[in-house]
Amino acid sequence: MSDQQEDFAAMFEASVKARRVERGQTVEGVIVGFGPKVAFVDIGGKGEAEIDIEELKDADGDVEVSVGDRLTAVVVTTAGGIVLSRKGVRNAATQRELEDAYRAGLAVEGRVEKAVKGGYEVRIARERAFCPLSQIDIARTADPAVHEGQHYTFRIIEYKDGGRNVVVSRRKHLEEQQRASAEALRKSIVPGAVISGRVASVLDFGAFVDLGAGIQGLLHVSEMSWSRNTTPGAIVAAGDQITVKVLRVDEATGKIALGLKQLQDDPWATASARYEVGQVHAGRVTRVAEFGAFVELEPGIEGLAHASTFPPASGSGGWAKSVAVGMTGAFEILSVDPAQKRIGVALVEEGSSRAATVDRDVVQPDAAPSSSFGSLGESLRNALKDR
Image (cartoon, rainbow, N blue to C red):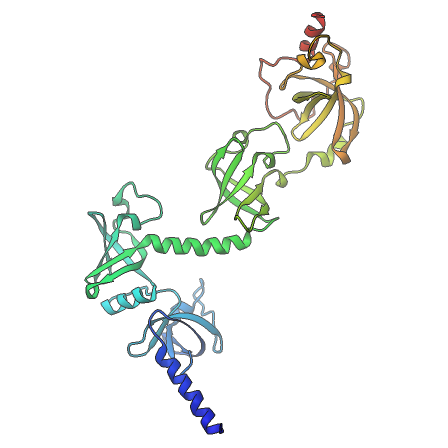
């Protein structure tokens, strides 16, 4: 093939491409110049397309592109020249512009004139449209009058009878915005990220936190506090604005695990400075096992009182029959191993000289024991009397 034939083939292919441009089509092009109100974009072929300069400005009003930059846009119209848009038809004033916006799937702005049967009358420039009640918002509208007089952005979902029957949806536009926001937000939700959210609901096992754009994460009760003995309702309430840390993101299911205690100091990190062998601390029984009782000395710090450290008791259950979760007492520190997060303790009998040395400066457990639990030492004494 000669050079002349190759040039002709290239020109023919370009002209074919130009003829194939249709309304609603997404095209790519290169900015080749700027006019007073529009920028000129080379999208291939003989002609150039135009795009409103206002659509190329950033939040500060500065044009964010230059000659030679590439952009992607949607063809709004091909009548009298190719017009592109990246944002939508903001000031559609004619039936032709409404039809172009409908076919291109672009947004239009309108004013809600009044509530009518089944929805709203919407005025888009000089044209009238109808918005069904279910399409005015994502959330259910309890009082239809709240939308009257409001200026909203809509999508045209029906265009019939030459424009005499136009149906619009604000909900569809909001959902598209939400999806776009959710996609951008999800990119920022990665393990280790610290983000803010609003507590949407509180359940027995934790709380769901709304992170925005319809995305929720689970804050499990075990990740709320360093203390084992806590309930979700004691830490957060629905509507609270909280800051959390992203622990895990399951790409397959979209589930997001959040943490609150990770933004607080681990009490074990400084435990060696607060606990020494021989000290006596106040404590509360949080769990009872066959080998002993776990005692909370402060939120997040538990010691183990081995079964052998309790006075023996006869009968079924032995020492454990008089030890219940929630009982309080004075405990002597027998061993401290912060690296393994272990502290050994032993109950100090009430009334003894050792009980009088209890360290009152130590942070007390964060849940006050019920008066029905009583003193652990008193319960043990009563059990011994029954022998």
